[in-house]
Length: 288
Image (spheres, rainbow, N blue to C red):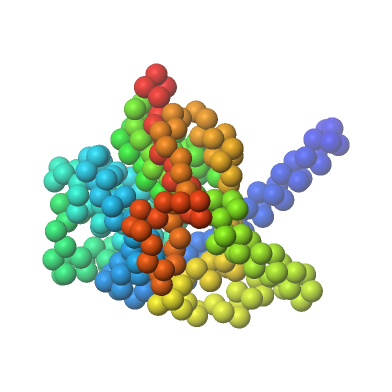
C-alpha cells in the first residue's frame, strides 16, 4: 500500500477519534450546563428575553408565517414554547438537541407551561438528535429554525448542508450564528486563548473551566461564562463565510442582531453594527 495513503488514513483516523472525543465532551458539557441554566421556565423566560428582547417577536413571526417548524438545538424549550403560542392549531413543532438532559428539561418546561396556563396552540415534541446527521427525509420540511447552536458543531458546513437537504423546495431556514469581530465574541475568543495558554503551562485541559464548573451565575450571565471556557467548539463567521456556506440557498436577509446583556435595555429590535449574531434567513430554491 502507498505510504502516503497509509499516512493520510492514519491522520484521518486520529482526527475522527479527536472529533468523537470532543463531541462526547460537547454532550457532557450541555448535559451539565443546559443553556441559560435557570431552574424553572419562568426564570429562564425572564432572563432570556431580557437578554434578547428581539427574540419573542422573532419567534412570533416564525409561528405566524409557518405551520410546521423543526428546531435544531432546542435547548430547554423556551423558544419552542414561545413559537407555539403563535402556530396554527393544526401545526407542529419538533425540537432536537444533542443533549439528552436538555431534552428532558424541555419536556419538563412543557409541563410547567401547561400548569402556568400558557396559551399554547401546539404542543412541541423534543428528541435527541445530531445537527450533522438529521433524521429527516430529504426535501420534506417546511421550516428549520436554529438559534446559537450550529457554531458549536464540529463541522458547521455539514450542518448547513443537512438543513439544505431536509428542506423542501421553497422551504425556509432561520439560523443565527456568532458573528466574527463582534465585541462579545472577540472577548470570548481572547479568554479561550488565555485558557489554552494556562493549559499549555499546567499540561491540563480546560483549566479555568474546571475551576468554575457548576458556578453558573444564572441571574447575571446564564451559562455564558461556562460556555466561554468549557464548550469544545465555539466558532464565529464573517459575512463572506456566511455567503459561501449558504451559497446553495437563496439568501433572503443577512444582518447583525443581539447584545445579550441582561442589564442593558436596548431597543427590542436590537439591530445595529454591534450585534453579536448573524441573523440568516434563507430559502431553498424551488428548482432544487
